[in-house]
Length: 483
Image 1 (cartoon, rainbow, N blue to C red):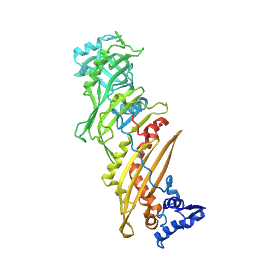
Image 2 (tube, helix red, strand yellow):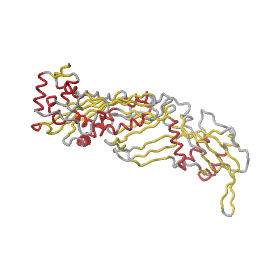
Image 3 (spheres, rainbow, N blue to C red):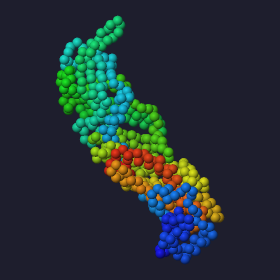
Image 4 (spheres, rainbow, N blue to C red):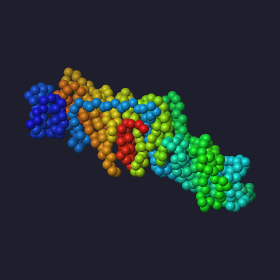
């Protein structure tokens, strides 16, 4: 027989007997016995009452993960992020981004045709035509057609990340002859050039102050300052129209620059969204964007975001963004500083939201402290609080709890293990716990707090894990590291 000497040992043992008709008697069947002093404390505390049974409808299947009953372990706070970091970093493979671009193109958001003969002056049109050698005379440049969806590409020759993104679009350029018949303008197609146009652009986030002011997100065509950020035009080998003198790779492409300028003119130099709110609404609070940068790094798009109240203190540096997608099976990753999670939970505490969640289970509950932290392949959430006037003589019953979730990728599946540690803050009140609230009701209270807060964040994390994210990416998502 195992002899139980302390309330802590008794509560831990009772966690395995809470569904028995008589939990105390079940302890003996399981090979436990209480010391004389502990037995006396129990009898004196219960004063003839029996331990409270589990709440109606709560069965062993209701417990998600393992349940222990002990003093809550201390959550190790996240180390301050290094200078130049971001609060949230996300990466998306260029192949995945191309799927989104295809949908945008098919929707018509990206124009499929540009009337260059209307956008450019006669002099500019003449200059543009001088770059080409036509196979049939009699026509002039008229329409530029985008014949297929655009695809993203890294800027050739660049090392590390780059704020300029290349957008490759298959095109057809028409040479037409204009006829006016009965007052109607009719374009007779003479010949065409076909190939690929590579435009260069960047994402710009205009985020004004004060915090919360509307922001504008815009895709702007890059200002050409060198050969590296110059747009490019290449013709297919079977194109009827040829280039007179294709520019070398180490020089800007003047022809492509002129076409990009015309396209930018029709699109008013940017594809913008806004003004929009910089607040990202979550069920337990808001994240308000204060900085956003997007770069390319190899075959991935990387975004770094800083939020007001986040753990980073200084501006993020785009040069610090790194591509964490190392496996061909990975297509997206998200990395969040642990301080962001902790800040959301503390904001929910300050707003009274956590107490409201607790009172869904216990009307006299008050949550006093709450914190959260990412850990390697998991996260932990800790609460302390009290049930007001729960014990005789109007004594509050304090409680503390920690829920730790570990997420482990296994092939195409993800294993999620949940471990719950709940206890009373003052072990001298353990008889009150057994006689008034009960072990399982305390577990229910902790579960209500956990489910009402962190599980509003977890679906976003788990949603990312379902998108073919590899083991490295999972480690990085849940490590709390950055960069």
